[in-house]
Amino acid sequence: MSFKYLDDQIWEDELRWTEVYSRLPSKGSLHNEHIIALQQSIIDTRDVALAYLFALNVPYRTYLMQDIVLHSSDPTYIVLFAKHIPYADIKSLQARTIQLGKPEWMFVFAYHVAEANRKTLERAIIKSGSAKWCHMALKYLPGSSYTAFRDPILGSRCPTYLLELARRCGGDKRLLKAIETILVEDKQAKHCRLFAKEIPGANIKRLEQAVLESENLTEIKRFATQVKESKLNRLSVLF
Image (cartoon, rainbow, N blue to C red; front, side):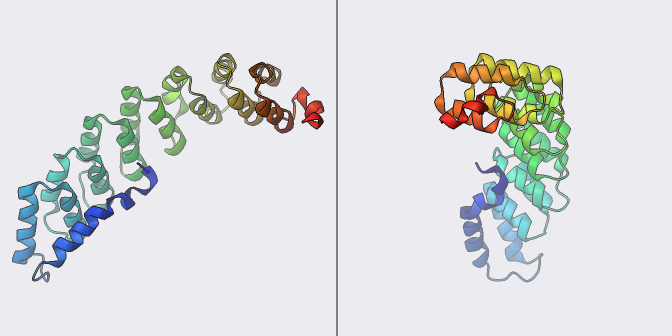
């Protein structure tokens, strides 16, 4: 799933909609019998893709199409309906997304839907226990508080997530020390280097020693050339 380009992922259903809609003998009025018959057919089949595309292209009794979306288990169309359909019931669509229990789609809903209650979605993501999607929320959702995602990310010990937390914690010294300790203990040479390079107040000597002990020659070289305070700088001419 490419969360940034959600609209591009339904092209097959869009082709199906174009084919169905093009076969209508007449499309003049919203109250046209053929439009009404098409909508009834969508209701009868509970076709969530066509329900969304009908609401998007034919602004007629969209609440009936929304009912199909709300009772579906397809998070793609729940998010798209909330994002694009005027007067959609954002609160109910968001609640349905949370009810499905997929943290990736809670994140996608928060990312795409301007009227979403992000705090509620963030709490649901945290409750899911997914460090990956806590990390994604912290990285991509404007205004996210690092304190909300701190514990799941620390608990994951994933160096990528930890480094993002360090970047966004506003210089929280206690948290930075905890992150640094995990990176050193877990011998994450690459992320020790990045931490030393990017994070003000990093313990360069400690991180440098961890990189040396990793015996990763590539990372030792990079540390020597990229971290200004490193004592390995004087040795960089040897690489």
